[in-house]
Length: 221
Image 1 (cartoon, rainbow, N blue to C red):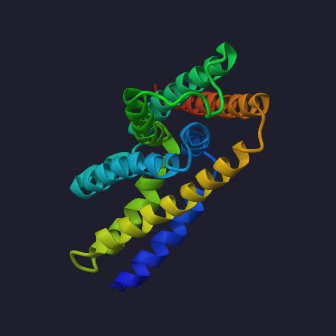
Image 2 (cartoon, rainbow, N blue to C red; image 1 turned 180 degrees about the vertical axis):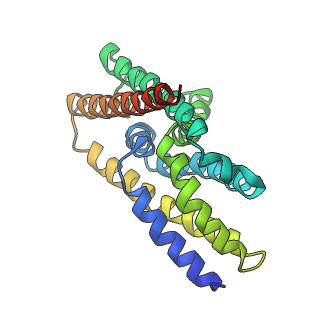
């Protein structure tokens, strides 16, 4: 049985190594932080935390074994890859049509503010769920940690989850702060080029996931 401080600290460190790897959630944080400021980082993490809390509960209830089966993982990769392609194409279209612009225009209406604050939360949920490697992480490392944490009493899993989420919050808040500072020195063209690069990354990642999902399903037929 591991102590609660050890579970918390180790979950934070391992969660941080995962959070620092480039992926869709990082793209969403960069994109939204450039538009609505630092708060986008914590808001994206909030969406990420919501879907991870749901997955932790599902794993505890028995989903963990199912997630390890190729018959389920391959369709997840195909669907998730398709979602990433669509999201990347939408960002690229905003760049092409001129809808993507640096913040600093007229003050938005209260309705626009509400939508802008909700969008990063939704993107945190959708981009996490559409990343098949996120699912694979929880089916392997995450499942192992839940099994270990559950042996430390009723506070074991909360200690693991809080350490894991705080690592995401720490990293993506730092990324958001860096983006906010950076956009003050970036021209409109530079900003659009950054967004275009992010969208191309999402699309390429989506095609990679979709191809692996499709080839995996074809091999099982």
